[in-house]
Amino acid sequence: MLNMSAKQQKHTRDDNAVSSIEISDSTVLAKNPIVSVGMITYNHKPYIAQAIEGVLKQNTEYPFELIIGEDCSTDGTLEVVLVYQKQYPDIIRVIYSEENVGIRKNGKRTLALCRGKYVATCEGDDFWHHPGKLQMQVDYLEDHPECGLVHTDADQLIQKTGEMVSCWHKRYHKILQGDIYDEILLKNPIMTCTVCMRKACVDIYKQSPAVKMFFLMGDYPKWLFIAMNWNIDYLNVSTTTRRVLENSASKSTDTKKKYQFFISRHDVQKYFIELHPPKAVIIEAIQKKFHKKNLKFAYLMNNKTISEESYANLAENDALSLTDKLYYFGTRSKLCRQTAKLLFILKKHFRFRRMLLSPRVKAMLPADRSFQRKG
Image 1 (tube, rainbow, N blue to C red):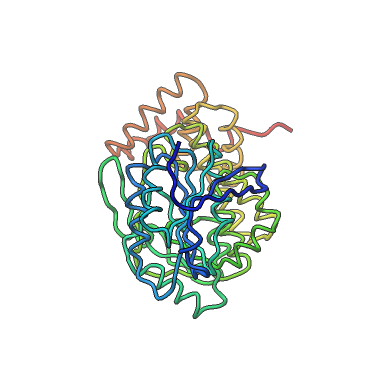
Image 2 (cartoon, one colour):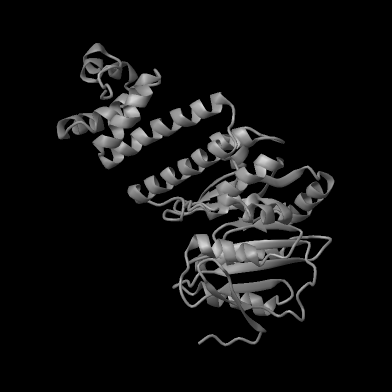
């Protein structure tokens, strides 16, 4: 039994009647916080203190609150969170329940409790390293009423190796500003831990049919909905550190789970293409990118059926690369798979591209028209 000295309030949400307990002290909390920071966490005991500290160290000209959605961790995360709530009752609110509700419901109930004009997010395994993050973003949103969401650059920490990659966004993404719906539909460059958005935009999103769809990721549909209706802007400064764990929600080591996440992401794209069609060239690029990635998953899972569908689509659109052919070839039989594995090893480690392009090897691979749809 947890020993609580703060005021305890029980909230019941309509998300399949999830019963939640809030630990907070309404007598000292800000009555009208300008920003609500939502932080969901599950089994983040080694990291949660750094995440909380990054929020507490923000230098702002206005009051803000931190709402921590703790999802019945088994490693003592809740105990750490409650220590901080007791030390900072004027800022921190904790919401939890007696059983695990999952990342989707935990995120929804945490967001539902946000009271600020603006909402920022930081999951329990990431952290903010720039003390001016919130102030910069709120100032920007105040000065740009057409903007619904502003995000920043971030550093990326590979937890297993300790490798730190500074300014990840600038290294791997184009800087996009304004009406970027088409661009993020093709490729999502927004890191959740860097975001600050208008609560009004979130409230409108929660009333839309999109929020009722069962997608495995909760943020990507939200970004797309905001991009449909408002500008999304970017501040070219690294404010946060995104920690990459081996088995996080979006970085599972299980290939089948990765594939489920990949398919769900494509479901999001298909939903928004139908809801708000982008340019034709964007739709074509999305389909090409999907089938190339799908072919890779088919190879990794040794799934002949999946490989045939994507191979046929790429061949029909004259979009097959040598790598695509190897993925397809590797699903045809055990011998083909062993041969493909060997060729991939040579290609990756020795860069024998000339050898792979030799007539002998090319003769082993299927021609572009070797697979034809029935009918």
